[in-house]
Image 1 (cartoon, rainbow, N blue to C red):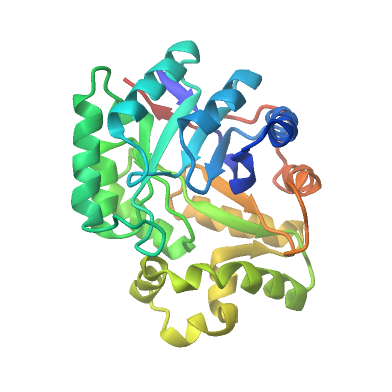
Image 2: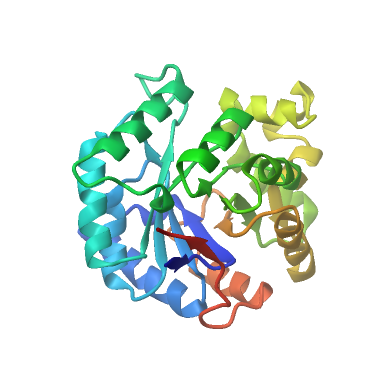
Length: 299
């Protein structure tokens, strides 16, 4: 059996609806995203199975994924039970994304690699285990990437470059899923695009997991100042006109990505989901209805 992810998906923290009014708006949006032809939706932030369930139920074929569920905040036995209930009702429609988050965001944070191994052990030992083929790890460094290949279907790296994607593919091997997140700014003016990017990126440059990864890739501390150098911004954002955005997404795919979780980033004063941006991006990437679907294996 295989589950369709598609070549392109959407990543957004706003998909994690918290209230009835918000949930209605999100459900309307995800139905449109399915119609536009995106293959998967990644619920950003610290999401869990309960955030995905109503969106799975409201749609017919698109895959919902947590991007990511923090292993510090959710009991693995409870996660396994919720996963079982959702996948039994909607086979092949949910992918459990797991991550170790950051020391600045999780009070219990310590030994993230060992804790992830223990968490996966607990999912395996649950009354109804979560199959490795139905979980993906937020992985940046070599050890976590290797774990993603060995104990999950693959990796969902956040805030990475095409060069990292190539290195991740080499570590994961040829068959594991590689689904990096990529930020998109549909703005052609370089100064405005980079200003939007820096306003968004600055918060992540306070998190050592990301900056250490950038240092491994050859960036320097100078690249982190002021919300990010032009070099860093241009490496982690796809911005510009249709041709430029397509070229950047093609660069990640050529580097070894199977699927791109695309996050449309707008100016800080924008409200709600960027639905017009999603429509425009579907045109830019020439997605028409249900796209030709990439798959990941399930047992």
